[in-house]
Image 1 (spheres, rainbow, N blue to C red):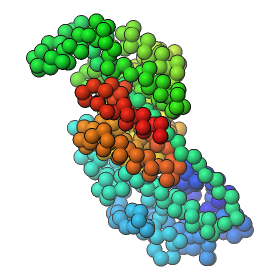
Image 2: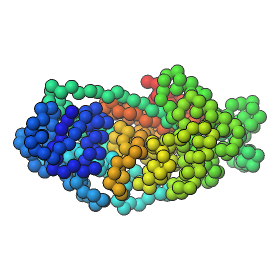
Image 3: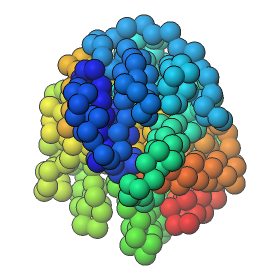
Image 4: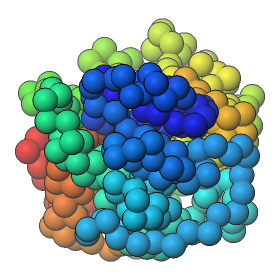
Length: 431
């Protein structure tokens, strides 16, 4: 057990210390504001305050964990060896910056509460983030800081038994469009055929016809392949189904379609199924509730996890809505245009609501990359994409974190657009 002396115990302090010590480093932590209790403790202990009590392990505190609300904070990036850091702590501190205040700033998404210009989908732009601006978006710096901190703790308290956590991989699959050609109804099917002709896509026209008349499997119907990989290699795989009504941004099969319902049920028999809330659930609680109930009716079980379509995330409103609907886990934490770690950690964490200054029961699972980001936004080839993925994976392995991937069912289609990506997926989740 680690004992922390501080001049004031706050919800923010309790939250971020437990993320570092309990969730990342597997060290139980307790707090005290009593000097005599701290002095009498024989195990590992640190002081987190403005001044040290003596020659103990001391980290000079920034004011952030003792404040409430949102303030405009001036941040200057420096280095701790080769890792970016901020909130300098001065020479008396055992490490050169306030690791806890900096970690809280990043993981609470403090900067997303501050005024910012939204992108066309009303999202916080990756380019506005501290991590992207300062080049550490592809490093889970909170976890890296934690392990560097651990090495110093081991030097100071060598007799304490430290436990290691294990690397973990979670494969997540978004089903935006279950089928490329089939089960779309007469109007959409005829429209697709006409559009192929007008666009001179004769090969696509031929594939569409063959598929519609069951001479060829629909290229997006990769569910059996995904489930086979899951079962053969014991891959923790989660499927997120979009069951919203048809809109400009939501083009899945109708949730009333018998074949689509059958696919959802069959996948739910072998893997965990979550909700992929449609584009316009973003600020529409009624629509979100309707879609959750719709999916629950299909699978005949409670839906407890989600990821928003188009990664539409507005903090804290999106998370507050999910909490109100008894969603326990969310997987939206990541950027559409940039790979890496939006919250600067590869460890699942509980959402801290800065509006109410409380840790909520909603657990956030941050993903490391999305297939579309690499292929479309960065214009990488399958080989280049795999190289980038394995770099991110190695960064997570270095800190025994949780590596969460985001693919789509069509990624394995091996059609003209996704040629070579089946190998990318398999290599990512198997090796």
